[in-house]
Amino acid sequence: MAPNLKLYTVLSYILIPIALFFAFMDIVLLFSSLANPSALIMVFILACLVIYTFASFKFLKAGIEKEVAQSLKLKDWIKVNAYVSFFLCSLFFINAISILISSDLVLLKFIDEFLLQQPTMPKEITSALILSLLKGVSLFLLFTGIVGLIHIRTSLRLVKQYEYLFE
Image (cartoon, rainbow, N blue to C red; front, side, top):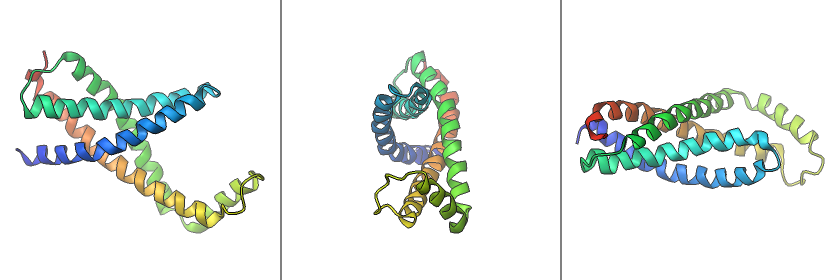
């Protein structure tokens, strides 16, 4: 197995639990978007990442590893969802970097302004707690963005390289 393919396989296995988490979040968001239809765009974008992950995993396991012919539909699913997922992973990366390089004072100022607008927020939820959660989520999104961007770029290259597997 080529080194590039080993990395692709490892990244694929890393993306599976992330995609399952986002699938769960997507279902929750779908129900909440019934009250707010403008949230449907986020449902669509998250669904693209989930679909891309599992379609590319199928391509890896059945197509590349077993050399079984794949349908042209699978190729289309991978490519279309890869482009939307690339956009999402780019946003994850950029937003996470912008939060992680911001000083705590700047972030605390925004958090305090947010908490002032939420008078019903429980007293246990402090600025420090929200800041630590924000940094933790940002690290997760940074990791997801990096893994996703590398995986998508490699996946699109492999789809082109293994073009003969698609009928």
